[in-house]
Length: 563
Image 1 (cartoon, rainbow, N blue to C red):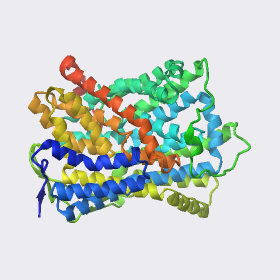
Image 2: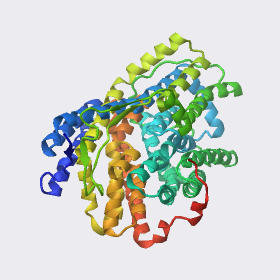
Image 3: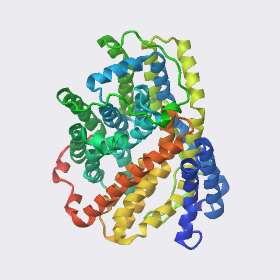
């Protein structure tokens, strides 16, 4: 039987909103306040979400259970699949001592730790966000910073802060494409609007990142490099998003930023170099520290080439696996789609969350050949042979990696299960409706709605699918530009990426800082909400003060776009 979502089961939006928020509060409170290990906190949050869905919102227990199973499956495939294989590659390179060589090589670009964070976490991470998304940039860059001697808290927290401005155009523009599909708004208009919001923050984030790392005074010492990295990312981000489309925004901007920063550091150097990474209490609290080989040659060009090769191979494979034509080719070889029994098209999403009632699809897409994690696995295998591993050595390391991150995989499965229960039960839509009732302040709070959506679901794409229709309907009712508010959902959402539980677990896993997810959450929470509020203020200005910024350049319509 079909079940229709109920958004105000108590006849009071305040009470219904409080009930809807309980699972999220339990999850974040368990991690951030009570410091319960993440996999246990995730299970507590899931149980709470199921209880609220069934007993408070009236969702049939069978449907709630299948929503949890569906979410857990998506958590493992593709997200857990990405993390497992990134950590596998990291383990291969670390055991051979290649990070000793990599550390020496990166000092050739700059031996200043602030510049290393800027280059790896911001510019290099943006490339992986553009090509793959879904946790890949944090997993790769946090592992690299750990290999370069950064503390777990610094490596995890800074990579999460850096992975903000590129998120809306991640995975070859997937969040924007999904937003256009769910709202029916023009793809180019949405791409252009987001491209006139986020470049401001592409300039701000490098400054914010280094300020969070070493404080204001040491940040100001390197402001020229921060401006170069941010501006060289922001300008292509604006141009590509407005005059081409959402597909290649991050990849082009990241490449320009990396090249610009590397060239600039050839002619400019900090007056007071910071050659040692600041140490903090987390440095002594790392699990899984292991002995590794120490190559005698760390300075030669051939040694540097060998150390960088696995990461170049990874970049190439991730890029290929992100190209739509490559995905289509791999899917044509083999893929399977499984409608989720007892859930698929048996839950109705109804107004006012959507303009017209429609059933929610629930199809598990097991396209393992085209999953980004498969490309990463192949990159790891190729790199492993290049580093001198045999088949037995690769199997040994893969088993070791799987055992190492077993609790992280369980955590991600439970967290995504929680997110899917809130989605299909309508409790997240109830929270969204509370934000929609804020009147003339809606441009600000509608932006924060996107932030909440990503914090809950762990994905800007999922947040856009969840709240895109609500943003459009509410904007039309309030006389606001629906393109502006739909774009604000995505732009505000990117700042929630650093506090979603999935990303925090990815960061703790990549840094081998298991069980310290609460510390990471506390480190990034202020930065997340502060940046989200700044996005909200920008959207308020676009809505009421500078409405001309809502206009899409006419020339955009004359530029051919990719299919």
